[in-house]
Figure (tube, rainbow, N blue to C red):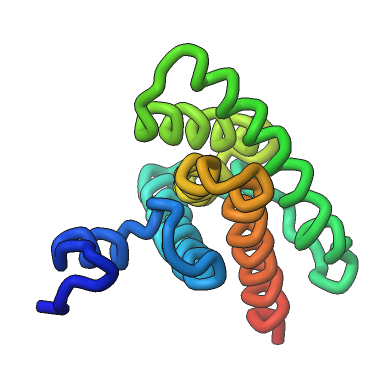
Length: 176
């Protein structure tokens, strides 16, 4: 068991390591952890959804975005512009949801479901990869909002940009 640091009990430090959404500590550390907390479960959820729909006999090709050559993608749009715009809309959505409830988990789940639904509107299988990532982005925004709006927006946008970058890199390196 790790000793208490900065007056925090060891249990609080363990919780912070596995669920680092308390708005304290290093912003860089938070972004790196949140990137992986968003990316890895999202990949697993998307893969499981793909397998389940395939096993059920669904035409998964019709449910997912048509494949595009990685070199024809607008990298700037995917990595910088989309996360920035979506983070501003996420902040507005969280503000509206916050008018109905003050429970962080309820706000984050409602936000994630809304974002999953919006992405599924275009490509239904995207719901499963997007919903978890936006849950993490929403929690990050909520955790860092008491520090500042700049930190809150960054806590959602930076991991989002890293997740999108990872997806593009995986797509690029999966091509032979």
